[in-house]
Length: 146
Image: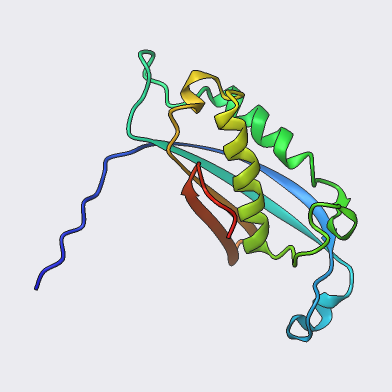
């Protein structure tokens, strides 16, 4: 039996920035990371759509960079343990990729990335902790919380 998987052609545009945060984790499996520690993440946001507009743009790169920075400013240079929206979760790299995805998807839906942002169908957020370690979350923009 053969499986046939349909692959859609997609345009993509990626913008990058970074954040510096402090946090701690709950659970013995985290060892010394249960104590307060800092991390710098390089953040990549990849917007995808099967179409581009009449100017041959997926989204305006300047708007994408501005909105990514606006989202990142909600956590940059902060202790996530003190953030009311993040106190009940372990703010692992994987979870933070999901969190940023949710906020940036909302910016697209609200039109803050222009008309092109409303046509984005898929978003991937990649957080690099180091050149040798990273995590990502990707999915459609109308994603439900796991």
